[in-house]
Length: 146
Image: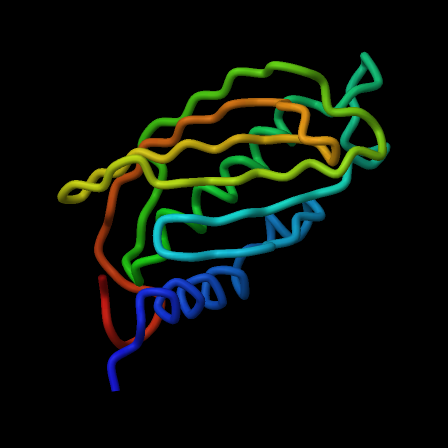
């Protein structure tokens, strides 16, 4: 029986999560995944803060990049980042729960464009991230590709 697009996204995410030591080490939780979408979150802890006593931008970037990775890999195709950029809008503070919500903007051939909004627990925008993806050879599990 054919898998639904949602089932393909979930199985792809399970396979990726099993090998994703970086997102786990960050303290990220993968909240949701769907075709071309993913949501991840993390709580800002002391080891995430910089010399200004706010969340280091690299950790915010990593959270957004991880949500992007799960979104663009949701079709059971291996996909990597080609180019990413981020604009920081407000600081993430110690104790904040940051949430990165990724949505697919376009997917054509081997290329994709994805936007990620990072907000805190109050819905305050922390950063905007845009990711450009590139499909490579391979898949996450034996079975269907979308």
